[in-house]
Length: 169
Image 1 (cartoon, rainbow, N blue to C red):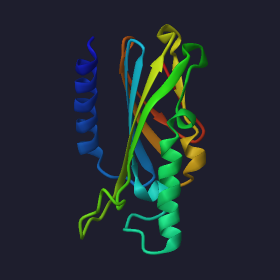
Image 2 (cartoon, rainbow, N blue to C red):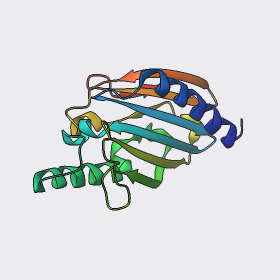
Image 3 (cartoon, one colour):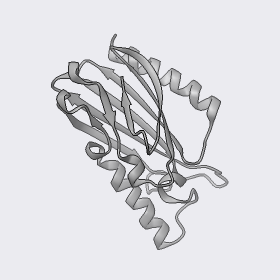
Image 4 (cartoon, one colour):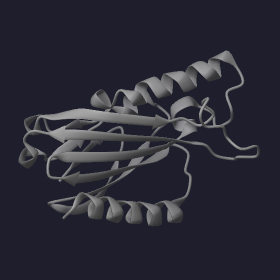
């Protein structure tokens, strides 16, 4: 299956699931697309799960919490750990924080989300069997990630939690 077909399918499934569930504090989504030696991950977290608030930062403590969340999320190589035998390397990480200099929340917004995208390339993709994440250790208010995966071995969904932080297939 071509990468763009996988991405389209993943976006479609994710959009349907997101529309059905909506914004839930403490719960994020993780969409994973695997094609040959490439892994694409799209993460969405409620700002509250990462910082403890969803409003524009008002205090130095709020600004520091937002900056800390951004710094943690930019380090995709330590947040997402593919099967070691697959020999995957992070190639790109893009994090979009609400209320940052390039993205302002609209007045009256009730909810704010963090969005992040990561791309890995794997030297031995046949050995890719799982992705582990210590995300829950960094963000104590995050209690679940609804993960969806599409790739050469099919598609699947799983709930990741602090006690079960590994997506296996």
